[in-house]
Length: 84
Figure 1 (cartoon, rainbow, N blue to C red):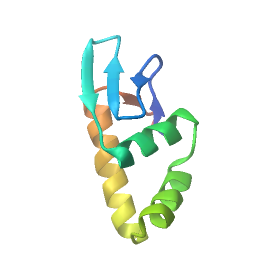
Figure 2 (figure 1 turned 135 degrees about the horizontal axis):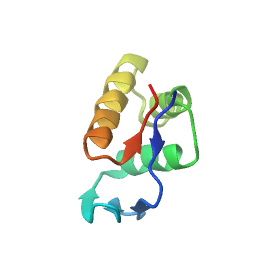
Figure 3 (figure 1 turned 45 degrees about the vertical axis):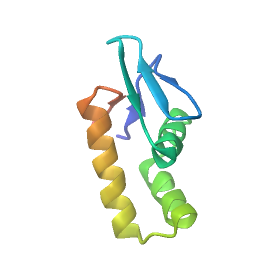
Figure 4 (figure 1 turned 180 degrees about the vertical axis):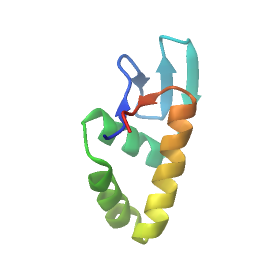
């Protein structure tokens, strides 16, 4: 299954994330904002990868590593859930 942004997470355009469940806040860069917005829209992992490759002109392998690292970080801070 695909990762999904947990319910009620607040995300600003500037990259500020607030988790009302835990009270924690985080900041991400513009790439992180883009990934989080794609997750919020329910985009599949492959769709996000395709966008990263085109938008940031990186190869697929680099995009996969970066996306997996970011998703693992989000999981660590309980900002996404996954039924994998």
